[in-house]
Length: 254
Ligand SMILES: [Fe+2]
Image 1: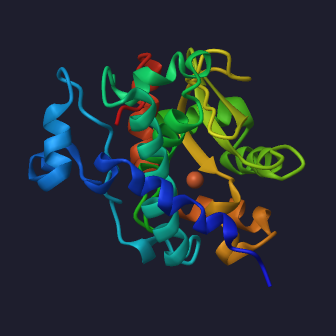
Image 2: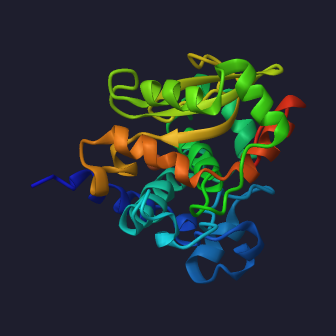
């Protein structure tokens, strides 16, 4: 019987922070009511707390690659916990755009809570229901062929990088832009390539969460099956936009 204890540890933390209960996109912050509104209005300065974005699809929309139960826990509990964590660390003050916060995240000790927010913001948007995500643009496909030989070769390298032997424990696998070139890399925990001091630096345009909470309910120890199934739900339409932005030096913004 597998243990799901790691899935149950997150919710309590998420509810400690009043803003975490709003869990709404910026456009709906004004509907915060009661004690949460009083606390929010009492915060000094123009600071606005980070909020949990809505998923751009239903919990079950990514099946069979990712099951609905995993999506619900992952978004509603785990991502919410990172939101609460970074809001708590910053005390709802001086909160820059989350991409900007990444730069000095390691030096300031925000790489776990802040990285967890940015990485999951990116992850949800990088996914789409099977058959809805389009294909690599002509420019991106050419860059993939130049760097890896083909998309299939990229997938092979990605699978090796995402395997427990390469990304031991919790972490992420990334497709990044370095200058004008593509590369793939991994990062431990909630680090990402935007962080100064990351093992590999660059602008991420696609990321895969290989924490157990991202796949364990469906795949248990079979992480390679999850890594392979990921390719069926990549939102290439979004990745293409991020690729164009990255060539101009701009990271995905949330
Ligand atoms: Fe995650």
